[in-house]
Amino acid sequence: MKKSLLLLKIFLFLLIFFIFSIPIGFLLKDDTNSYARTLFHEFYRQEKIDYLICGASHVSHGVEANIASKKLGKSVFNVGTPSQQIDGTYALLRQAVKLYKIEKVFLELDFAIACDLSVADRVGFKAEYIVASGIKDLKIKTDYLLHCSNIKYYFNSFLPIGKDKLITLNPKKVANKAKSLLNGEYFKYNYVSKGSEYAGKGCVLDLEEVPEGSFSNYYTEFPIYIEGISADWKNTVDKIIDFCNSNNIELILFSMPGSDFYLNEKGNYDEYYDFCKSFANDRGLKYYDFNLAKQETLTLKDSDFHDDNHLSKKGVYVWTDAFCSFFDEKYKEENCLEKYFYSSYSEKMSATPDKIFGLYMITSDDRKSMEIIPVSNHVDSKRITYDVWAITGTEESLLSKDSIQTTIALPAGKAGKIRVISYLDGIKQNECTENFASF
Image 1 (cartoon, rainbow, N blue to C red):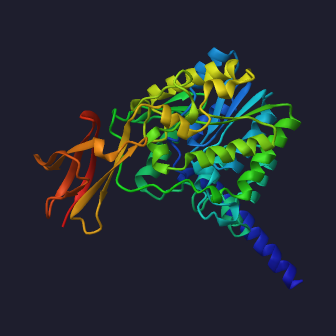
Image 2: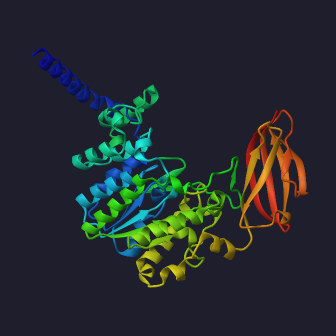
Image 3: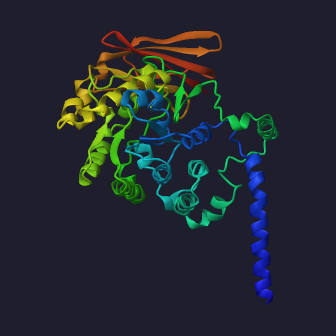
C-alpha cells in the first residue's frame, strides 16, 4: 500500500511538474525571431503542396519556392531547418503527407549531414528539437523523439524545458518575448534579420555575398569522411524511399551546389559522389549532383554564395532557374546525366580553365609566420605569385611583392589583418584577408 502511494505521489509530482513547465517553457523559449517557426507556421497553412524539397539548411537557402511554383505550375515548398538530420527530414515528410497530396519529393543529400554522428552517438539535440517543435501530429512527434536519441535523453526530449530547447534566462530576451506576446507581434510570425529575409514557402535569402575571388580559410579542411556515413543514415533514407513508394510519390535524390573552393578544400568529393550514385543505383533511383553540372546546366560565381556552401540571395535566383529548367522536363531524358552533368567532379575540374578558387592563410603555431596555400584545379605552384600586406590599425605595410614564396614572416608583436593578392601567370585571381596576432 505504501509503495503504491509513493508511486502515485511520484507520478502526480511529475505530471504537475510537466504541466507547469509548458507555459514556463513557452515564455522562456527564445524563438521570437526564428525562421524555422515562420516556416512551420506557413507550412500548416498551405492550400496544397505538390512538390516538397527536403533537407537541411542548404534547402532553406536553396530554391525560391514561390518562383519555382510559377515556373513548374505546381505548389512547391521547402522543409529545411538548421542542421536537420535525415530522421528529422523523414518525420517532416510523414507530417507533410498527413496534410497534403504530395506528388514529388526532392531529397537533398548533403555530405555534412550524411557523415554526421549516428543516433547512439548524438549528444546535442538543438536541430532535433527544432524539428520536433514543428511537428503537430502526436504519433509522428512521439515516434521521432523516441528514435532521434539515446534512451538516457528521453526525459529532456519530452519535457518542454531543458537543454537545447532554446530556453533563455536572459532578462532582455525574456522581456522581448513577453512584449511580443502582449502586442501580438509574436503571432504575426514575421522573420526579421539585418542579413537575411524570408521569401516564403520555406526559403531564406541571405543578403551578403562573397566578393569575387575572396574565398579563404585560416585552417585546412578534413576530407569527407565516407566511412562515417552511418547505418542510421542509410536505413532512414531507405525508409524515405519505401514511404514514398507506398504513397505513390516520385522521389528524386539530388545534391545542392557548393562552391568550388569548398569542394576542392575537401579533396575527395568524387568519393562521396560515387557513394551516392551507387547507393541510388542499388535502389533503382538516379542521383543528380549539381556540383557536377556542366556550364550550360548551371553556372555560379563566388558572389552567388553567402559562404562557401550556402547560396546568397542572388545565387538562390540563379539556382532556382536551373533547378526548374532541369526538373521540369530535362531529367526525364534518357541520357540526361551524360548530357547535362560531368561523370565526375575531377572531370569537371579538368574541363574548367586553370583557376585559383581561394587561399588557405594559416598562422604557424608560434605565431611568427603565415603560410599561404592556394586551392586550385591542379595549377602548378610555379605559375602563382603573391602580393602580401599587413594591416595594423590605420597602417598598411607591404611584406612581399610579386613573390612565389608561400611562407610570410609576420610583423612581431602586432595584431591585425593580412591581405594577400594572388596572381596566375600575372593575372589577378584572389584578394583574401585573414586576421593575425603575432608574438
